[in-house]
Image (cartoon, rainbow, N blue to C red; front, side, top):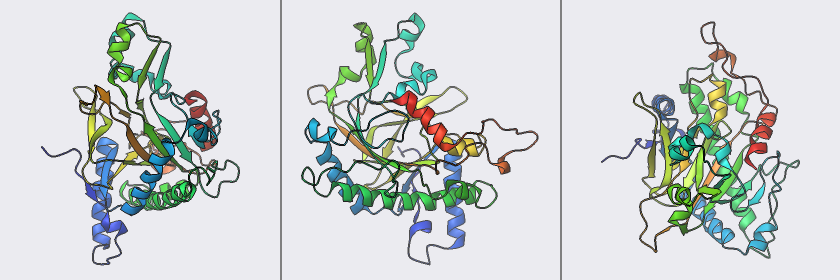
Length: 357
């Protein structure tokens, strides 16, 4: 059975071979990419400009960091609050369940919603480390001591730069294929000056820890998921899971017969999952919808009934804090008035983070 959606080869954008990078090939790739993003909010890409050796190096340090003693990880703790995320967030620190409560019926909580006995806390079974722009002096990324893990800061910084460069070119291609005035989206993105790279770690846990039905039977005050349904901030998100196959990532597919979450697999090592994020939806006035996604349970594990640990790296490619997130003029008309209010990226992020932490 072919995996959904078809993988798109991005070499017409990133290859150094001029026979591949023709204007015709670029237009064809641009049309295919925008078609998938409009249909599903997501695309799976190969040959996307981020070297496999960079991804492997990032995950090598990813594994080492999250195996550190808690005290070492807390030395670079994210303080929380409205400011951009920087540094380490412990288990259950973020609370993505607050972002889309309208989708809790898709997470095994339908009976709890109907009976009015939702638990007091809906938490994420996840840790993370957030890396901001290397040039950000207002909100610098905490630097882990080289005495604790030499090479970590350099590896995350290198990955940040390479993934951001890839996102920059992909946004240009989306701009070309989406039917906007040339350069309008790219100019508003301004090179992704507010981008953030997150390293996500989902520890191995007993299946019933993130199985809502088991908790509901015990009338627990807490239910956990790896990540609850949500969409990301930013223009696009570039996601790299740490393995091939189905890892638990699921995308909400909107169909006339009803919305449903569909698993999305990685076909080849190094593939990128590109997701539409909130800012692109707002700028296009809803012409392209943000991808609602979650991390559910992977195929059944036989190891003592546990759910295996999972790792991912994701770049939230965001515009600068001063950017206006209201619809761009080229997507407005008399019969298509603005659906979204004007708000700066900084204020939108503060509003988001205030609820998340």
